[in-house]
Image (cartoon, rainbow, N blue to C red):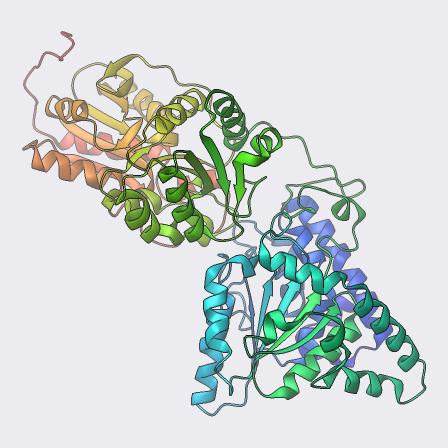
Length: 633
């Protein structure tokens, strides 16, 4: 029986000796590696915060004291220490533990965030609430150096600095990375703190000498660190934070549990907002992760524990986009690639390798990226900003007022649109086609397969006087679905039987729509399946097709409210088309994590459910007069 089996709450950690804590840290790493090797997940970030999480839960009293983890993907250790070790094998599985904090799982989780740079604002509000209510409670915010590149974090720091009574401890988990190495001026300043040789050498010598003194060495070392003007003020430029008016402690070795615990104890005693600067190594303790140059096993799929080799998988949508971008870069010298700290996840690493001078990584700063893209367009370039669909939500005002208002030729490529599955509610890209419908002049494309991805990306960058969007889902793309005929700019994919059903298939849902059409044909129902390709603005030819059919059906992997189907229905009403309408889309709710296919079936976006609902409505319709198709058939 290991130590982890005896940990049912953070209180149990306080009874462990230094040696037992070290053994527990090794045990936790073994569990992290063996579990994520099977389930996939955020391994590297969690390997890096084992000792840090142990120290936090030994110094503070969760859930009375609140711990807020920025982004939330580094909470696996926290889950193991807060009564969820017996369920950890269910990580990211349907009905199992979430890969992020979850209020439904534990009273120790208060914020379910998985979007970066938000923890300080949550923590600021919590700490102020406890101060106003007169409650003796601390708040700990754990934020990575990567998340500190987000402007929202600095807005929070600006306010935290003047909240002198807030019992708030900010732990800067400095591992030089978000997904990939942290960039920008902040990263440079933190590097100076990390690498100042005088600080490191003197601190190491003093630490060793003090701790060698029996009985008083540890206390003397604590006192040295607690001094308002200690040696760090002379030897390291920590003014980056102290200039804001915030008490600063560190840098501290994040893999020395005792040192982290000592720093956190000092911060807890201070009584006001304090920053504790902790240096960690992403992937610490697992050699394949530490040696993984791209992202230190940030979020690998299932892998071999012995050598870290990921299990073979085919090409995904992102890989095809990556290839298309390189080809585009060869043809168009004005094309610039942009990312927000996700060079590898969105597939721009290949473009960067060819044209580093035309590749821009802004850090976790989607708002800045969007407006900077507008500036690039004004300067005669065509930026392609690749970002997960869920993260574009953060930059809506910039898309609207900074790009669209100025008619800037910026292309947004939205990876992981629609249902993403394993990562849970916050990562589903189910909002973009609703949010972007309100942006004047914006054109939005949803490719159904790889051929259409390449075509639509090429078409998008040809637009120089308006923003364009190309979206695609997570995972492997389907086999190409050929075009049977054209209807204006739309592709007709299926045309069978009478004019019963016009099935408008949006992007990745085309495969499902074609399957549903086959089921309906078997029941004697005539179906025309059309892929709009560009779903905003509405293709006029689709309006005319709607007049010719008994029922119009739209299918999309976006929220029902304000999406493509809702906009099409409004357009048909405006055009006086009275054909009955049926809309299939994602329910307007936060979806629990599971595999993408499981979720789609659960919410009725599978071919069987769609065909059944269509058949039920067609059966209830009045007979339709015989019409001749617009193509003469």
